[in-house]
Image 1: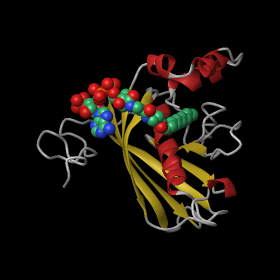
Image 2 (image 1 turned 120 degrees about the vertical axis):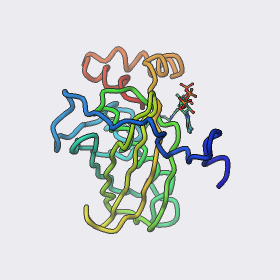
Image 3 (image 1 turned 45 degrees about the vertical axis):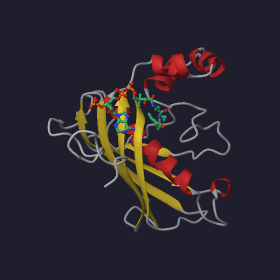
Image 4 (image 1 turned 30 degrees about the vertical axis):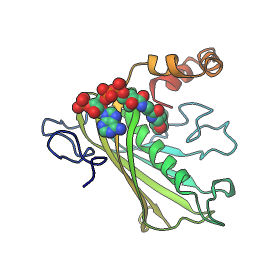
Length: 201
Ligand SMILES: CCCCCCCCCCCC(=O)SCCNC(=O)CCNC(=O)[C@H](O)C(C)(C)COP(=O)(O)OP(=O)(O)OC[C@H]1O[C@@H](n2cnc3c(N)ncnc32)[C@H](O)[C@@H]1OP(=O)(O)O
C-alpha cells in the first residue's frame, strides 16, 4: 500500500479510525429523522438555491449521525456525453458527508475524500445518497457514503470514505474572500448567517 493511503505511524490506512476513536454523538438539538436540512448557504455549489449550475442537493436528517440526500444530474453536470462528471459525483458525496457535521453541531471541513465510481450515472438520473459518521477521534470525524441509482434500493453507483477535521469559524473568516464573507455576514436572516459559517462550505 502506498504512503498516500497509510499513516506515517504503523501503516494503518489513513481513513481507518484509530483504536481510541469513539462513537459519534448526535447533538440533542439535531433535527428529527426525516427533516429536510435545507441549504446551509445560498451560494454553496452543493446545496445552494442561488447556484444555477449547482447540485441543489436536498439533504434530510437520518437516524443517529446519518443523513440521506438526493441529487438529480442535469446537463450542466456532464463529463462524457450524457453522463455525470466524476468530480460532480464526488462533490455530491462530499456535500452529503459534510452535512453530518450539522447533526453533531461541529464545524468541520473535508481533509480527505476517497471515492469509488462503480457505475456510470446518466443525465436525468437521480442519485440517492446516504452517509453516516462512523467514528470520532479528537478533531477528526470518519464517515462513509454511497449513492444508488434507479431508486433508494437500486444498485450502488458511487461510494466514498472521508475524514473531516474540526475547525474554528476563523477558518472561513480568515481564508475566504472578503466580499463573500461580508455579504454572508450581513444577511438579515441570522439563522442563515449562523448556518453559512457553522458548517464548512
Ligand atoms: C444544513 C447543513 C448542511 C451542511 C452541508 C455542508 C457541506 C459541506 C461541503 C463539504 C465540505 C467541504 O468540501 S470543505 C472544503 C474542502 N476542504 C478544505 O478546504 C480543507 C482544506 N484543508 C485545511 O484547511 C487543513 O488541511 C485542515 C483544516 C483539514 C487541517 O489542518 P489543521 O487544522 O492544521 O490540522 P492538522 O493538524 O493538519 O490535522 C488535524 C488532524 O487531522 C489529520 N489530517 C488532516 N488532513 C488529513 C488528510 N488529508 N488525510 C489524513 N489525515 C489528515 C492530521 O493528521 C491530524 O491528525 P492527528 O495528528 O490529530 O492524529
